Image 1 (cartoon, rainbow, N blue to C red):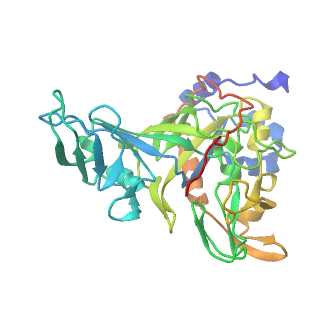
Image 2: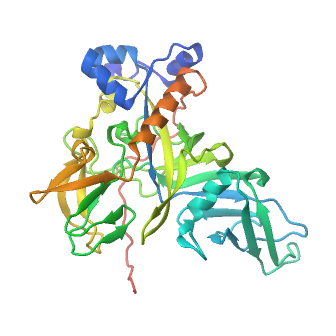
Image 3: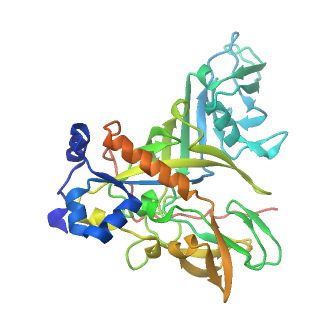
Amino acid sequence: MNDTREKRTFEEINEKIRNGSVVVCTAEEILEMIDRDGEDAVFESVDVVTTATFGPMCSSGAFLNFGHTDPPTRLEKLTLNKVEAYGGLAAVDTYIGATAESEEQGYEYGGAHVICDLIDGKEIVLEATSKGTDCYPGKKMKATVRLEDLNEAYLFNPRNAYQNYAAATNGSKEAVYTYMGTLLPNYGNVTYATSGELSPLLNDPELRTIGIGTRLLVGGAVGYVSWNGTQCNTAPVRNENGTPIGTGATLAIIGDLKEMDTKFISPAVFKAYGTSLNVGIGIPIPLLDREMLRFCAVRNADIETNLIDYSVKSLSRPVVRKVNYAELQSGQIEINGKRVKTSPTTSLRKSREIAQILKEKIQEGSFELQAPVKLFPQNQGVKKMANAEVLE
């Protein structure tokens, strides 16, 4: 395959985007094309494959800068609509996490709601206190702010777009409430969290074209990969075709909140668990060589994950069985001879919409590809916390 690795470059593809000759298809469309025309013909004609996902991504949040009060106040302890934001930055900077919960409404309203209310142009109540200093004499303040009032407001998500993720079920006699949704007793249902063959990192499993600096769509706006995501596992267990089983790699994502649309980023509430943020991400995959085409030809039947029993209160939860996404997306799988209903936390409809929008942007010349300025470390696993004692 070395003789074809340099058949195309990012710059050659961008030149085709600029002159209007680029050929783009979604990750689902390329499978139909391969079935119809064969890999050779598809590789000769297609330059870019668009991928996407839309689902809850708890490790998300936003940096905000409010501008100074007069007299100046250092916002040491602050809330936005009664949701705690972080005050350990410069005087009027803060970070609000998606999973932070309201002092008054609990997990029914959280940081994810504040972020999306800002995007929708709603007024947010800012309240803050400070010890007061010579240069920041103010000790207490309150204001209403809108997104347009802020100097900067950008999404910065430490861990998004999991390459793969375990499916969830519950083998106990009681319902279990999790970030994967409500799991019914006695293996009453199964939930899963990926767009499968449309998912970005499953179409570039070795992270050859996705790295720091990759341009993408996030929340409906142009954004970038800022770093490898936290808990990024570039040494996952893989199945026989090289596709990761389980979690795999993750991405840290940045984008301008002022350009986003709540059609593609929205709050998520999980009963008896908490608040999260549905994030829509679309990433273009350039077909640099035939190997990249083979990666993008991955199908749901080829992508496996572990079905985990979430009723076990340990990191060493048992694997009930392995399952592929063709089975999961069919709506039912078999557990111990019983047919069990499956449902996604990821919206396949939204994922398809994002992939199509990205395709159209590239075709019309308004979205060029960005080669990574640095690729992620390879063969890097994920550590557990050492020497920790859970006290309660």
